[in-house]
Image 1 (cartoon, one colour):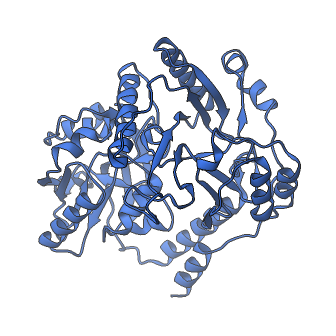
Image 2 (cartoon, helix red, strand yellow):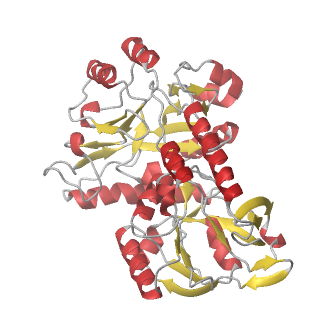
Length: 457
């Protein structure tokens, strides 16, 4: 109990950061606003957990500066769509008043991110060259401040004169999906979520990326094409913002070390017989080739099968999930399930919050989820059988056809000889490594990454 209380304390530990440098920057810096800012929704992150929606219209840089100085946000986002009433934009079904969901227009923007910035640069150039070939003039390129670039084009397809707002918004979505599909068919690997989401938010240029201290900055196509990353970054302003240095958040780093030390201490107090000692193969729910995209994975230990099915069907309906694949592991009636539709991690957290899944701890400390795909072995003797596919919860055809799914996890279903719907929209890398993990007394000792051909089921 004592160590559990310490763990809870560390989990909620926060450090107050000095925002003086940030306030001075917003007082004196140049500012940038998108076209028709008065029709845009603005959202300020005052901390990692506190967010405010700006309730008044921002019409010019003087309005923007006033809000920036008042709140000193660590992150500033604006809507890539223009709205009749931008102050109360929520989900598609949220309407504060009769004008809050009326869309006026939608920017054509691509968010290109990769943990390796050079890959982001090369992918951005591929997109620009293809779009130029198809007749879309380049409007701007922004360095995001961390791992990638935001690329905006002038949309050559005119906005529709459709009176019904719902149909008009769906028109924008479908138009962007068609364009993304063309890019994917031409070998582009990208995060499409921003582009096709009419209610998406984008980091405001000339504001800080608080993860690194870099300012989100416009760059020219010539510089993107000809300069090295070192040269590009040397011309990007970087604030000496407390808590951020060389891309490392000291607050998070310290808390991780404390958690690791505490977990090690707890494990050392456990009896030697605690947990199983075995090795097995696992897959991860991360979508390779896309930034912070995952498939939803659920695990149920203490629920009867009818309850599991009811819960999954409710999730499928509420979050428009594609077909769900349900497995039984033969360990005290343990079940796990997943669908291969991809989501940003923030959406995964929301889904898990409603899932009653035993792995919803992800809500408090996001970690990728690993699932066993082979028998458990102990001293070369099989002790638990391979998880068995027992049911496929079919989604409707429209959801399956209009949802982007993970190429690697689609291949996983094929490798497991599990039925896979012929999903037309596939993205991410088709190749995925698998983990041969060694569990000792219930704790992970080590993992080895292997391609599928070396996995022995």
